[in-house]
Image (cartoon, rainbow, N blue to C red; front, top):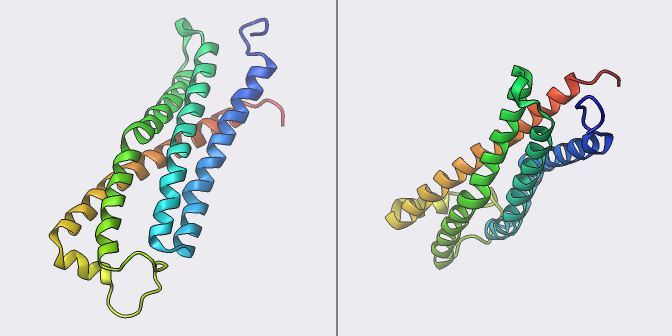
Length: 189
């Protein structure tokens, strides 16, 4: 740290690069790549791609959140912590917690449920089509009605997927709010 308790220039640059890199990655994965891949790839290929990317994505998010929290925590004067500093620390702690839940718990369960779903779908000749490309009645809807095991697997998958999505959105929002906080604290631009 520089004199007066201010972080050095390198610390500031690392903090901003790691935070903005994580937030940019989260924006891309959440709002761009998933939708593009979902609309352009066969259903099971999309699942395979996501199963390979998401472990890296969640662990990188977790690592970035950890680095940012460590940097910010090391800069705080804990005896005189202001509400603003506490809220910024809370945002980074929330991001770390949610990214860790995704990386260490939800991702593996979501992927396992997806593989189980795909096994049943492959047995029925499904999964090779691009979503939205089938004509007539939805074969997946029919399968849910005919096979209680498939219906239960689907509910399990969407439960884990939904929780994972909420955690991901929480990380995205936490990092975005922290970035906004950094921007508001700028004296020159």
